[in-house]
Length: 157
Image 1: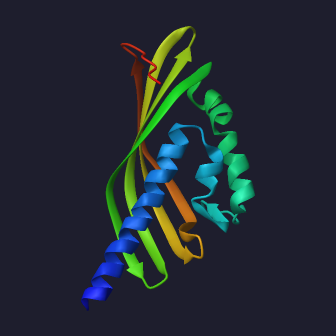
Image 2: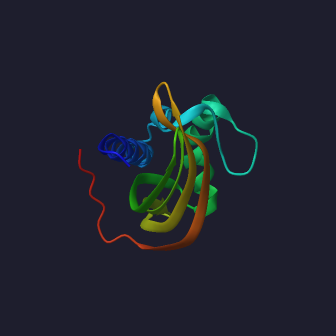
């Protein structure tokens, strides 16, 4: 590989990792438009047909309300997502990535604060678009989940 190829490889990896980080940070801010923008116009999640950005935006916007019965909670107050162990494999204008995510959800059940923690992996197919690297397809795989009492809930702005 030439120095130019090495530099392009580094820039592509950094751009892909930035999309991964933007997705989880947007999720923590409930910025569902920004989450959808991480995908290609015809992108999708899971094994079903691609939903496209509009369908993904709609899916993301309902994620909190869909999660309430899942965890049997009355309200979700805050979420935080941290990425780990990012692997990126480049193939020209396409790439795959695999990473772990550790998610913490602060919620209320029966007037009691709880915390739900989840270990997730994301397996993504990326493609270079005129907008930059975007996720064409994402597989979200829950590996484990636990919950417990929340010792203190602080909300900082």
